[in-house]
Image (tube, rainbow, N blue to C red; front, side, top):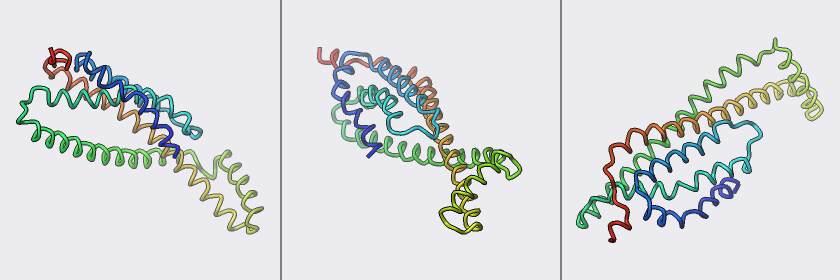
Length: 210
């Protein structure tokens, strides 16, 4: 429900996509749209333990302001020079490529998050040692808390260690997701920088109608 309440902001700007694409050259739309999309990802690349739904609304608004029109511009750029009899085949190929690319990207991001979580866990664990005074103080605090709850010192000690391990993993995942957002933003900029210059000048729908 929290994710949906943040994403719903995108529906507010979707009706403007067609009007903008009809008046602005498609390559410019792609360049500006991809840049703003990357900015929205960078806004989420500094996550911490206290980030929740409200902190995502700003980046979602920025992303939603260009996501619909950028997607429409990509579709238009891919099909603008096709003949009518090629439309059905082109639509099938375009949807196949988009679906395949989405699946590959999703798998790649999931793998990235897993690998980065493992990496950051290793880095954090190096700083969490029983010989470290802050760790000892935290363990003592947790031991006292769980002893008061469980009444068994041995079970409390085990629960305290598990609690610290869970905190380490949680923090590692937060940093890993920050890395993923940063990677997506950089991938968007690099991809647009490489691809857009190869596009020929595309007529605006308003010019075609004339």
